[in-house]
Each structure stands twice: as structure tokens, then as C-alpha cells.
Length: 240
Ligand code: NDP
Image 1 (cartoon, rainbow, N blue to C red):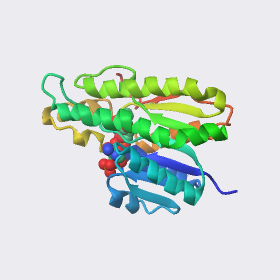
Image 2 (tube, rainbow, N blue to C red):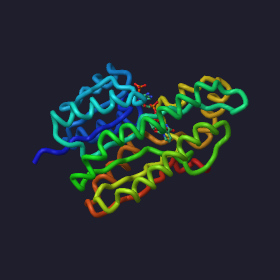
Image 3 (cartoon, rainbow, N blue to C red):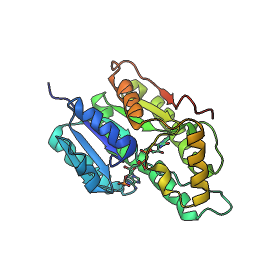
């Protein structure tokens, strides 16, 4: 029996790439989306349609999902993972950094959800995993705009779960603490970046992205009548 299609946004690095490798090893065909096409292709995964798509481009997200569904059948799992963390203080952070985070982390997540959800509801089956954060549950220094986007992910995710529960579609929030990925590298304030790095090291290091992928696979692998609503995981040494 062929395995169903899995769609992963932000699959070119970090958690998304680890998740793509894991589900590929389980035999799933994949749609992998990110702006760096060469990094998607470098994963070298079989039955993986790689498309250069910016999740803030709703039409491009929709077109890629339709193309993948024509090739591999309906999407059974969407992992809404693409995200940006641009740390800064509200008094002096460049405003375009807030806008980028809101566009990618909030609107991009909604666009990808809309591309798969109506057909899932119609079939009465499907799973959406939204990658939130411990920063979607509590605040951290220099994180104000970022936590705003991640609190939004948590609240939208839980509200969507309620909205579609009776249809058989599952909605899961996976909230990691610090993970060793490229996420921090995009913060423009060097001082904030080095403070965060020092904080990570003082906690004994961050999670391996494979651990987050395993949590996603755990939730997806439960029987269809079980929804793991939320998984929060962090390195043992991370206090906050
Ligand atoms: P990475 O920076 O390694 O990965 C981010 C991914 O998102 C990349 O594949 C990137 O691809 C993609 N992406 C960014 N912007 C866009 C865009 N506009 N369109 C399409 N894809 C985009 O970081 P992580 O793996 O850590 O991040 C993944 C998710 O995990 C994020 O939502 C993040 O908030 C969350 N998270 C991370 C934590 C951590 O400590 N690392 C902790 C808690 C949550 P490309 O640049 O090629 O487009």
C-alpha cells in the first residue's frame, strides 16, 4: 500500500530537513517547499517534489500543493514549519523584521493550511502539524515581535483544531525549546545573537532537530481517532 503525500514547508534546513529525511525513510512521497531550491534538492530524497516557494506567496503555495497532489495523491500531512526568528527590541528593531516574521510565521502558515484543509475536511481525514515554540507559551528577552507570531501560531492552531475536530481532521502543535539550526543566524543584532548563543551554551546545548522530527512523527503515527494536541519539548538543561 503506497504511503500518502506529506507536505513540509521550510524543508531546506533545520527541523524541516530532519522531518523530510525521517518521513522519506518511512516511504512517504514528499512536497518540500523553501526559497533555497538547491538545498531541498541536495537532500537527495526519492519521490520528493522540491519547489522554490516563498510561503508568503499564497498562489505559489497553492500551485505547488496542486502539482504534488496530481502526482502523489491527496496530502495527508502538512507540517507548517517555515519560520523566521529575528530577535530585537521594539524600540529599535527594524520594522521590516516584524513584517517579515508576521508574513512568514503567521500568514504563510495560514496560506499553506488553506491549500490542504478543504480537501482534508471533505475526505474526513488528514493531519496538520504547526510548529510553535516554547516562545509561543511564554516570553523571553528581545523576543517581543517573535513571541507575538508564535503565540499566534499556538492560538490559531488550537482554534483550528476545535473548528475541524468533528470532521476527523487532526491539528497538532509541536512547541520546541532551543534547537540547533540556522534559525538564530538571521537575527541582525550581533549583540543579541551572541547573548542568545551564550544562553544556549549555558543550558548545555540545544535540541537536535531529529528530536523534533521524531515528535512530529509520533503525533502523526497515532491512530486516526487520537489527536496529540500539543507536544512541548526542550533540552533538559533549558530552564526557561
Ligand atoms: P532554520 O532557519 O534552520 O529553518 C527555517 C526554514 O524555514 C528554512 O528551511 C527556510 O528555508 C524556511 N523559510 C524561511 N522563510 C521562508 C519563506 N518566506 N518561505 C519558505 N520557507 C521559508 O530554523 P528551524 O529549523 O529552527 O526553524 C523551523 C521552525 O521551528 C520555525 O518555525 C521556528 O520558529 C521553529 N522553532 C525553532 C526553534 C529553534 O530554536 N531552532 C525553537 C522553536 C521553534 P529558505 O530560507 O530556504 O526559504
